[in-house]
Image (cartoon, rainbow, N blue to C red):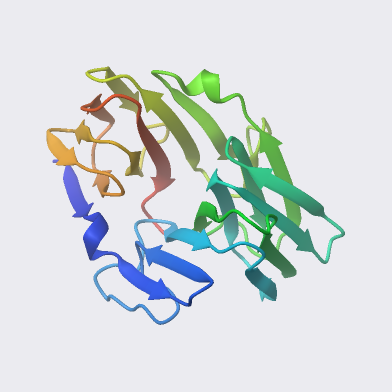
Length: 240
């Protein structure tokens, strides 16, 4: 029997540091909700707004797969592996923290805010060699369909991570009906409405609402507004 959990946008954790305004789907930093610690291997989904010229100073991570998806503006990355890059809407960044990495993330603009999703997934292998990658995707390839933006390391295609997880984004015309088959037995789906409104498995979701579904093999969704955008995470439900 299908299981589900719905996280409404207005019920997320809220942090306002002046330079950073963040919404937390799961417990993070000073936000603690024992009922929202994680969804399967999804540990963090932060919806961040960073003021011009500001950002996250150099700090460490280990044993986490970190995915950054810019929604507006430009984000500058530097790390101790000598990687340096700027990503914007249509780009995706992955970092396998593995045995340990330090990095910084700053708004690359002095005039425009940057908006982004930061996602953390528990890895399926610990203490791997840290790595960084970024990729510019063709946004037109997600018109009325889902475009895979991250896949497992076993596929070694495009951006990959150390986890049996597939991340997709799509942008849909109103009334477009789409089915998605879950990639791996034992995986569930966490779907976040980036923009607009969707009906997902007969549940209405609005902008920045999310639904988690598991014990099912397929989900169906209908765009209820023009240009509705969705982020879908197909992820293991069991932690290693």
